[in-house]
Image 1: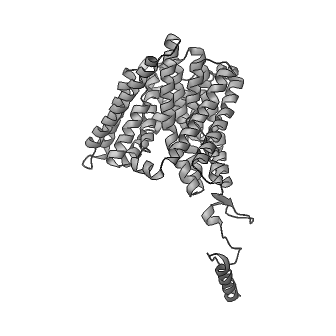
Image 2: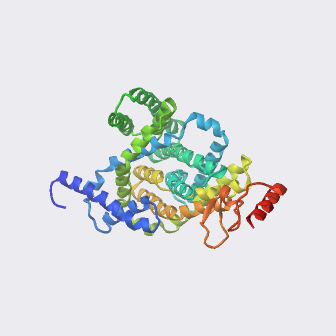
Image 3: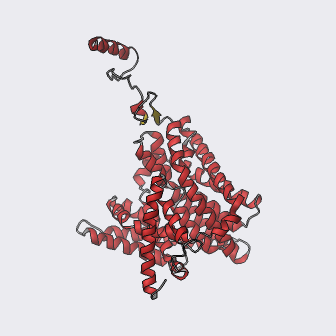
Length: 439
C-alpha cells in the first residue's frame, strides 16, 4: 500500500469496515450471524489471501482488542442488577456456575491428560470454553416470540455466563503467569494477580459511582456519551498500564452504574456507538488467524468443539437437577448454550499474548475456527431446545403458520370452528352449544 503511515492506517480502517459490511451481505443470505461474516472478512483481507492490510498496521491495532473487550464487559455488567438477581434467587447462579465450570473441566482435563498439552494452554482454553455468546440464542427466541419459564431461565443464564467466564479466565491467567514465569506455582504467585484484579474491581465500582454522579438529566445525550466513553477508556487504559485485564473492572463499572442509577438508557446509547469498534475487533481477529495452524489444530480442535458441548450440556443438566427444575427444562437447557463468539474471541486474543508463539497461535486458531462452527449450528440448536422443551409447538395442519409459542399453539380449533378457551365438561358443552348456533 502506497502513501505515508497515517494514510495507510486510515485507508486500512476504511477497508476493514467496508469488507466487514460487504461479507455480511453474503453471510446474511446463508442465515449466519454477523460475527461470522466479520471473521471471514478478516481472513479475506489477511496475509494468507489478499494481504490487503500492511502487517505493521494490523500489528499496531492491538489496542482495539482491549477497547472492544472493555465495551463488551461494560455491557455484561448491566445484567448484575441486584434486585433482578434477588428475584430470580440462587438457582440461576447455581446452574450458571455448574454449566460453565463443568465445560471448563471437560476441556482442560482431556487436554492435559489425553493430549498431553501444556497446563497453561489447557487452563486458558478451558476458561475460554466457559463463555457463551447470547446473541444467536436471543435472536432465535425473538424470532419465534417464545415466552415462558424455559425462556426466562435461558436469558438469565446467558447473561451471567460471560461473567463467570471472565472470573474463571482471570484466575487461570494468574496461574498461567506464575507457571510461565517460574515453572511452579505458590500461594503468592496466584494471590498477587488476584489481589490486583480485586483492586481493579473496587476501582471499577468507585468509577461507577462517579459516572452516576456525572450523568444526569441535565446533560445532553452527546455529553453523556462523551463522559461514559471517557470513564470506560480511562479504566481500560489504567488496567493496561498495570498489565491487568480490563474485563472484570469494566464489568464492575457497568454493574455499579446500573445498580446506582437504574438507568438502562446509557447502555443503549453506548450500544449504538460501539458497532464499528466491534466490527474492527472481529475483522482483526480474522486477519490474525494463523491459517497454517489450522492444519496442526486437527484432532485438538475437533475435540474442543465436542468436549465443550458435552460439558455445557452436562453442567446445565446437573444444575437443573440440583435445583429441581422440571424435566423439559433440565433435559434441553444445554442445547441453548452452545453458541460462542464475542467474549471468547477477545479472551483468546489476551491468552495468545501470555503463551509462547506456537501455542498462542494454536489457541487463537481453535477458538476462531470453532466460533464460526458454533455460530453456525447455535441457532438451530436453540430452536431445537425451544421445540423439545415444548416452549414452541409446530402446527400439524398443512399450510400452518409454523412454530408458535406454546400458549398460542395449545387449544387451536379446526378450521371453521370458533375458539373457546376452557377445560373439561364446561368446554365441551360450550363447544356443542356454539356448533348448534353455527349450523
